[in-house]
Structure formats: C-alpha cells, structure tokens
Image (cartoon, rainbow, N blue to C red; front, side, top):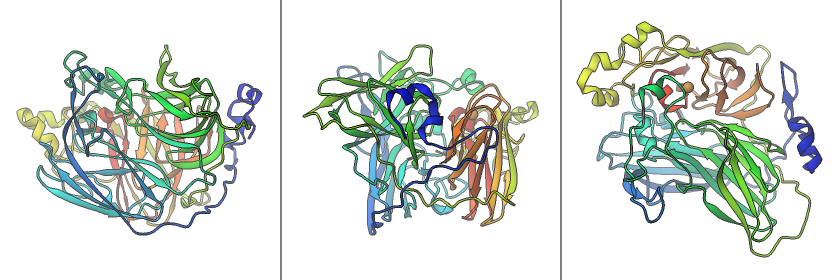
Length: 485
Ligand code: C2O
Ligand code: CU
C-alpha cells in the first residue's frame, strides 16, 4: 500500500491495495501474513460485579453520575491471549436481572448470554459463570441483552481484547470507547434513555459525548511512533464517520478482523462496530485529532499529543495483522437467505406488550423476552416478540449445520440500521450503494434503502440472534433469531 500524501488524496480506497467490490465484482482481499505466535493456553479468571458506582462524566468538579459498571472503572478492558480460556464469575448487584453477551465472539451458543433464549436471566443477588475459549484475535466487547436501553445507557459494558494478531509490535495500543450519555448537565443524573420520537426514528441521542468516559480527552502518545487505536462504538444510537486530522492513519481491522492496511478516509462506525487503526503519533507537543465528521460540524473525539523523544523518522507503512481463521463460506451452491429490515405493521404495533400488560409494563418487559413498550420495527415482517410474549417466537430461518449461506440484508426504511448476527463472523461481499472493502464483520451498517450481501458458514448449532444494534430499534421489534441444527 502507498500511504503517501498523493495516494491519500488521489484515489480513495482503490489505491490502497485493498480489494474492493462494487456491483458484484470478484475481487478478493489481499493476503495477510500467517500467524507467527503460538497460541497460549491456560485460564484467565475474571470476576465481574454488576453494580451501581459513580463516575464524573461531566468533569472532575461537577456532580457525578450513578453509572452501572462491572468493576471499579467505567469500561473494563480485559486483555487475554489467543488460546486462553476465559472463566467469568458474574455477580448481579443490580436491582434488575441481567446477563452478559460476548459480542463478536464465535463461542458455543450456551455461552452467548441472551436471557430467555440461551440462558435464564441472572436475577438480582444471583451469580452466573461463563467459560469459553475465544477462537479469534481482535477487539470485542460485552454487554447485557435485556433492558439494554437502560443497562447499556447507564454504562454497563466492557472491552475484550484477544491478543496475538500482531506481526510487528506497534509502539502503543489504546482502546477508545465512544459513548454518549443521556444526562442532565446540572445534576449529573440520567434522563430518559428512550423517547417515543427516537424509538420511531433514528433513536434517542445522548446529551454528552465521551471517549473512555471523558469529554474529548487529550492522550499522550509516543512521539513519531505507530499507535494502534482500537475504536469501539458502544453507543446505543449514534453513527460516527471517523477520520483523523494532523497525521496519517490506516485501517488494520474491522470488528476485530484483520484487513490489508488501507488509508483511513472516513469510516461509518455504527453502534457496536469496531475499527482498529494505526496512526503515526505526532512530534513532541504536536497534536493528532480523532474526528467524527458525521454531523455538519465535525467533532473532535480525542486528541493524541506527542510525548517523549521523537522516534527515528521512517515512512508510514503500518504492519498488517496476521490473518484470521474464520471459516470461508463456499459461495457456489450456498443456500440463499434474505432479511428485510422495515417498520412493523399496524396490527403488530397494536399487539404491543404495553397493551397486554398495562401498568405492570416495566416488569413485563423484563419478564417477557425483553420486549419494550411498543413495537415499531420488524425483520421479514415479524416483530420481536410475537403476539405471545411468553413463548419464544418462531426463528426467522432454519439453517443446516455446516452449510454456507449467502444472505441479502435490505433496508426498507429511511434510517440506518447496524445489523448484528450473533455467533458467526460473516463476510461482507457487496453493497448496492457503496464501495466497501470485502471484509469479515459481526455488525454491518445498512444505510437507508441499501442492500448488503453477506456470507457465512453456519458451523455451530443453536439459536443465534439477528438484530439491529440501534438499541431502541432492537427493543421495539427489530430482532429475531436463526436456528442452526
Ligand atoms: Cu452486541 Cu445481540 O448484541
Ligand atoms: Cu435499526
């Protein structure tokens, strides 16, 4: 790849050596180096205590906010080596039930953490054990899967990094969690996480933006060094358009999955999506800004400030990560699926949980498959839950174990939907509207009226959720599951 200024300005993605597909071409991703490091073994024990704690989200001298976290810091960052087994003891000290979904990990279905579907809810005062060996390296995260509007809205989430993908170590490695907060700027208290207007449209946006819980932090970075930034959009609503100013940057992984490095020119990062980039840290005292260009006024999310002795000058040519072991779907002869993301029909909306449960709504939501007060959205004309909220609805599709599937995701609405499939890392093949690199992902952003084709191998049995990760859409109907048997 040519990361020179001219290449950056000249040809967009196409000059960067990454394979592009537009309108059905057959390009393949550039080859990545094989993994050099031997897999680790052994067990990594983790104790997570979900509880209310306080965080100074408005700044050090302002009223604190009663966040919900798994530990003493806002977003736990758990680092393990590929091959290690993660053994988690979750204790629930919240006033409502919870569970942990391990977003993006290809682990057994009974560890997937979806209350009422893959495990019983973990009630207040109870504990639950998770134990699995993440098969892939990369940047992942974990979060609850019921009343997520409120639980994630209060901050309940953590970062899981599986190391072992670097072919040449970078000079620093930072996880940056992008998340907005719905808080009152005077009292620091949370305000309503959801609004009827937001639920029906693009979601309810936060009032305070943050990176790692701070407003526009300034972070020291080894001057002149190559810094790996693991960006995680853990917001429930906001889509970012991520770029940098004041230095060079290259994308090295999408949702934790390595890609041949290509220059970062702006990347749409929807809720739940991750992007690993490498930036060249600036000279001592100089700044490199991480920017969100999505809104009319670009927003500086964070600033890296060069620190220490400047590194020896060399061209910016970030080392690629080693390739992953995601099973390659066989496109020839693959079974076809299609999923239409749309609003819910009027009758479905009338059968809402609200109508059935009236005043007992809050408990009803937590005890009835995690449905919300209204039904606004659907996948293939079905809204979650079905009209009988006490029983698991029918799967959206029955998949045969071990087969390859090609699925078309179509957006029939004027809003964006970050579509997430549990359990399988899929290959994004093409978009009807945009040039996208062929890449593996677990969440893909469907822009208005867009169709995106993905492919994956249904290699593990179970009930696997498929849903929009804009949480108000998910919890008001845009969720279903695939049964693999
Ligand atoms: Cu990030 Cu169904 O989840
Ligand atoms: Cu959506």
